[in-house]
Each structure stands twice: as C-alpha cells, then as structure tokens.
Image (cartoon, rainbow, N blue to C red; front, side, top):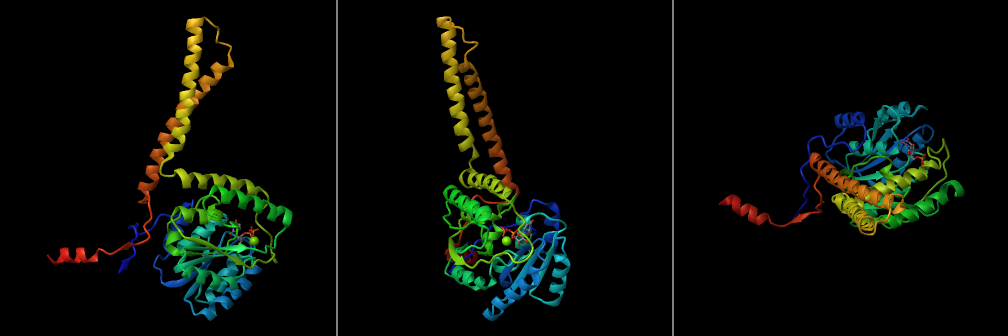
Length: 358
Ligand code: UDP
Ligand code: MG
C-alpha cells in the first residue's frame, strides 16, 4: 500500500502572490479541498470580447468528457467591462468561479490567485484571448494521466508576428533551455496542465509564470511537452511589447540562481568572494615586497588599485554570502518549507500498527 506524504501546512497556506491584498482575499474565498477533477485557470485583462466565446469553447470541449471541472477566471483589474461580464456569466452557471482582483497586478499574480482558488486535482492554465484552444485540454489531461506532473503545450505552428514575437521568443527559448535543466521547445505557451500538488509547492513572483516548468522541475516534477493549436489574436490586443524580453532575462537569472544555489548561496558568493580576496591578498603582498625590499614606488601603480578592489570586493561577496545563508534559512523556516519534496512514502504501516497494539 502506498501513502501520499504531504508536509503539514498551516491552515491558510502562505500566499504565493507578492500582494497582501490578494493574499487575504483569496484566503477568504479560497477552498483548498481538492473536490474536482479539473480546474481551468484563466487570467483576463481587458478580454471582454473573447470571454463569452472562451467560456463556450471550454464547455464544449469539457462537457462531453464527463469530468467534474470548474473554470476559474481571474479578472486582473480590467477596464473594459470584463469584470461585470464575468460576474454575470458566473451567476448563470455553476462551473465558473470568478475571481476579481482589485487592480491590475499582472499575469503572474492573476494566475497565482487562480491557483489558490482552484479546487481541481488537475490544474490547466490558458490565456483568455482565444489564442490557446480549449479543445486541447483533454489531450493534456490524458498525457498527465500517463504519469507526468506537468504537461506543457508547444505552439508548433504559432500564429504571432514573426519579427516582434517569434524571433525574441526563439532566442528566449534557446537561452532558457540552456540555463535551466528543463528541455522544452516552447516555454512561453500558457496552455499547461499540472497536478495540483506541483502548483501548491510553487511560489510565484515577478513574471515567473513563464518559468513554471523550471520551477516545477526544481520541485522535482516529471515534465513533458505536447504540440497544441495556436490561433492569432482576434479581439483586443497583446499586453506585452518588446520590453518583455528584458524582464524575461532578469527572471531567468532568478530562476537559474534558485535552481542552483537556493539552499546553498554561500557556495556561489563564497567561491567568488574567496577567490577575489585571495587574489587581492597575493597582489597586495607582492606590492608590499616590492616596496619594502626593493624600495620601489608603488603608490601610482594600477596594480595597487586592482589589489584593493579585489580584496575589498571579495570580502563583500563573502559577507553577502553569509547574509544570503541567513535569508535562505528564514525563507524556508518561516514558511515551514522543507528543502526537499517527497513524491510518496511506501510501506511501514505494519510496524506502526504493531506498536499501537502493544
Ligand atoms: N493578462 C493578465 N494581466 C496582465 C496582462 C495579461 O491577466 O497584466 C492576461 C491576458 O488577458 C491574457 C494572458 O494574460 O489572457 C496573456 O496575455 P497576452 O495575450 O497579452 O500575451 P501574449 O499572448 O501576447 O503573449
Ligand atoms: Mg495572447
């Protein structure tokens, strides 16, 4: 017999959103019991024209499967009437949960709010602009059932502008696949399916929704990619411009650091700090010898400057590493987050029962 092991969590699990407002609101309205087969989480920012078509398309795709599902639509402070329409649609049906954020927080916090509210054992995320195709959802769920923790969509035939979207995305995909250990063709596709435990274990900040597979991998998930449909945007406009590339690179550095050094920051800062201090020290000693034993004038030498910078910079890195160690311990201990994730614990029940009997 197998038993799923889950580390005990406080009743109101810590919010993964960098906003206290969302943290409190979702804690009030959230429901952590996993009573449904599937939750489809959709962030919406000014998508009033797409919304009714999206709801209809999801229902059309999922109703025939017989799955107990819900749609969790998160209005991210839209100004075009999305919220009002969403409320109305949620009033008309039982399979739609509307989460209305107070202002526009961005796609990542909107998704995180949806995750907190979702009650499905499987969580599917997708965009609300009809670029992803709800008809693909059953395919993703079937793949998940084969034993994966995360199934990521691959927009094999992507319908976006070649120069402003496809090219930056190609470059970003190439860099990300080298910097993280997760080898995917398409990191930017929002259409993904997760087992809910994986989502619960992740904390989202910044615009990290693009790196969910990488974060899930850090949490030990089995990941696979399947080709999905992609359509051109019919209504409204994209919320992002070229500036996103820069933000993606910054987020990538965070993820890369988290993957490699989250539980041992001293290893990276300490290594560079030690090397730098040692080199500075050697150069300084060399200059001291020149000055003391060979009576050379070293005051004007660039090497003196270099030795000083290396020595002081190295000391700073070392102390930074120590501070990071403290922060890392606070990060894990304040949230009761273990530094490992157990998939399952098998056996051992007999011993426990025997002990109870005696
Ligand atoms: N979105 C959001 N908040 C934002 C920006 C975007 O909830 O601040 C939603 C948006 O409504 C859409 C999804 O995130 O459902 C993806 O955004 P978009 O289609 O603009 O991105 P693109 O497809 O152009 O990469
Ligand atoms: Mg889009």
